[in-house]
Length: 339
Image (cartoon, rainbow, N blue to C red; front, side, top):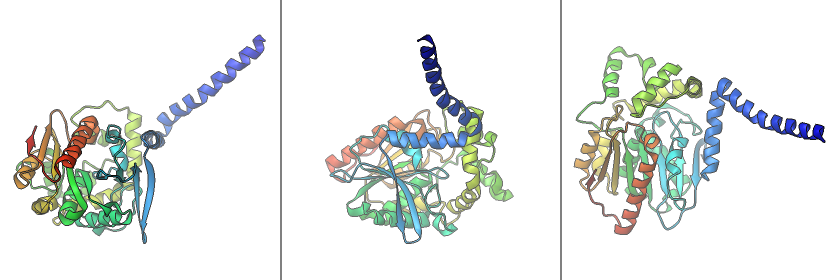
């Protein structure tokens, strides 16, 4: 009996040890794989399903939760060099009855990678409209959320296709001619003179550069283990050539101020959310939008940088939900609000 009991504990201990050892091995040897598993787990936990939409030879990858209903669907557009899963921390706090669609932007993650013309802001707007048509999201007006590069695309999309959009949430959007230049833009001025595109701060190639990028985009100082930093770099390095090509398009002459050039054409109610300590896209851009769109709501967040969806996901979800409810109650009306 004692022998059988000892064997039982040995087997049980061995069974528990296998996943623990697998986790430790993944953390130390394959951190990139661990990061992928992390995203897979949270998508499942939050009820998001990954799907594909094929438009002839072009494929979009997106995740979705819920079904279209009486309330507007929500299309979420991520920023440069990230992917649809960057919204997971925000989705966690959004009402489960909302129909959510988080798409990989052109060339990013699971969406087709073609040529430079698709990576300009005009090109991305055209592709996103193709995606919207394909999944019939514009069967009735929907709400668009975009951050950084995705905010630029979201704003231009609302200007070009006003009948598609019921409302717009812009989070630290790029594409504006701000009164004040950010730390990042000042660095770009130097790069323009040297023509050295290998040292763009948003395209790290080492764990040290990854750490510096995180400090640039976040006001909060995260203590990230070296192995995870290396894993984040390992995931990105195979795509760095694409990131450089796409980056040169979105900061090029035809895309750099796309939102600024089109914002006067936006007719949908607009909500602007910005981190006061944004070092990538200066917070002074919020006043540019407020002046151009007198009815927009503006929320400036203290102790927050450029990566607002990561730093303040609950706040983003609350502001978005309140805005959606307000729009449903008052139709297309909106009151200006600075906070």
